[in-house]
Length: 215
Image (cartoon, rainbow, N blue to C red; front, side):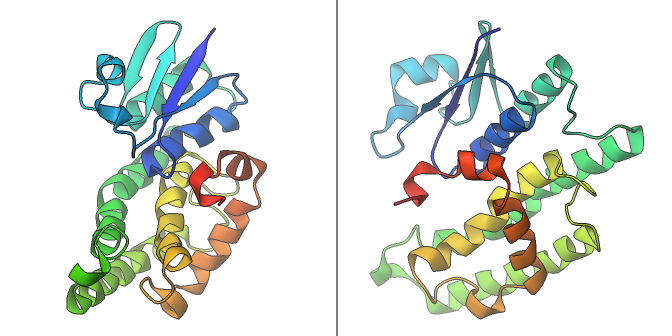
């Protein structure tokens, strides 16, 4: 079976699928789509995904886009090791957390980035940045409750819940990596720092680290 995976460096939705591929130990070819070169809007890429978004997976000629559809397809085709869980209750919780990450955590994280890294310095609004920080910190209290005392959102081992939430939680820290003082800084919750450290120790995370973040 031939799998080709199209991703954009730093895309949390693409990183999710890259982690799922590694979790399942699959053989695949990863093809990076360059955002700056407008490759998402190229004729060749739009033939794969007319919406011009990553990720895209081509599996033996079957083209799939939208990250959750891809994850479910990979789980159907390669159920072991699972990324959803071994019981109906575990699978429901994993899907719920992944959906919350895609919607609510992404929205809060994106608002901070939209007002900082994605906006020229001369156009930044300090009040808008502070509002984004406040909303994000409030959202993070919910994620602390979801994690509880477990090491991962999926329980004792990473699952699709973690592969969805981790890239977004790490992107928050990326703001301070790029421009110290614009992100949460020392207001970053301790649980988030600890969780990120656990995830970043994983060989799968190290292998899939966004290429442009390494420089």
